[in-house]
Image 1 (cartoon, rainbow, N blue to C red):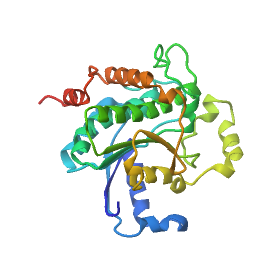
Image 2: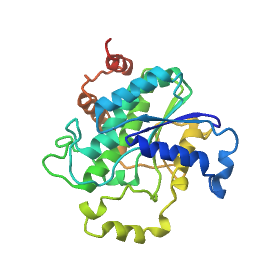
Image 3: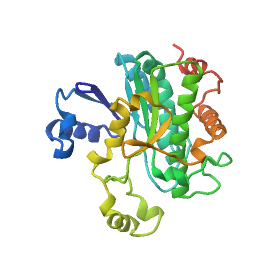
Length: 290
């Protein structure tokens, strides 16, 4: 993957541009320096707000119009255990930011990805998915809301989406695309900034100190994602769940085929489309009319 063109699709363009400059000017730490040898490639930024489906469509259209190929898609953005709120589209924030936005983004880019094979689609989930279930009767958490329950549901949705996408690609005999979901570990980022509001006062400080021996740097936390994106053997695997750069088991709920199919169809309806049994028909229906 040396010399690749990497596009950071981010909500905050200013922070994304700062990250680009940091990547260009800050050398990697010693344990992982070898993987950065060679041509550093090219970095670009594109605005993407997963909590606004119009923004998702716009970003996907820009990438489809400007990029000759898309070989790797990493769906890594999201929020964690935030206070209850609805997005611009009227959906619970964690469900849309962590799942529904990625679902639409992936489908809109999939025709380009199909033309770019071999290709990989990576959905960053969490160990928290084992505590989750999909509440189809209240998927938007309008009747009752728990920040932890909604987060676990969204992370389970990542794993179910990964498995169902792999199944549907195989069903229509599209080869050369592999899908992955993964737990990256507990990482030193700002993802837990809402803990003290949604759990109990001082929760963030307490958890950061309690888990300090297990917290990874962002660089180390990216290793399983990089493994799924670049490892040769991983390129022969699809629809599986990873942890610490290896395949591991996911929850029983994540392996429920009927649940995965139902979530797929519900998600299709929520992005404003009609469910199709054939993946190719669904992708064709998502192409905007001109």
